[in-house]
Length: 112
Image (cartoon, rainbow, N blue to C red):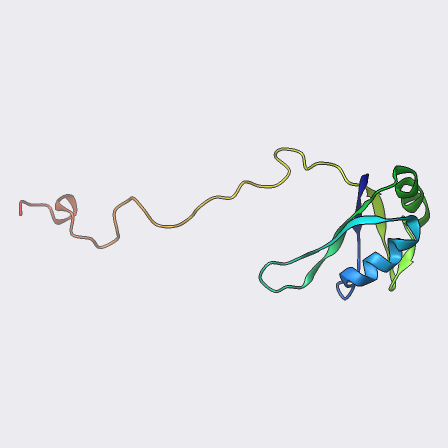
């Protein structure tokens, strides 16, 4: 089984549209249109897993650069994400430090 990356999809494309584009290349194990988790809108790319490696290779050769709903789609074999490609998530929330205008002894300059 090969997993393919499908990029430069129109934002109006649905998972069913992507499935239809690839179904002539054999049995599809999975079609995943990637969407924004807050808006639910497509991010313009998908992953398609095809059970037959030869058919997957043929799909890449046939579909890469082809017009799909007015856009030239990019199709290639998906590669695992390299460490460091995605910025690590950091927490910027509270904790620690003195608040401005607080009532610390040092700022008031005297004993309590």
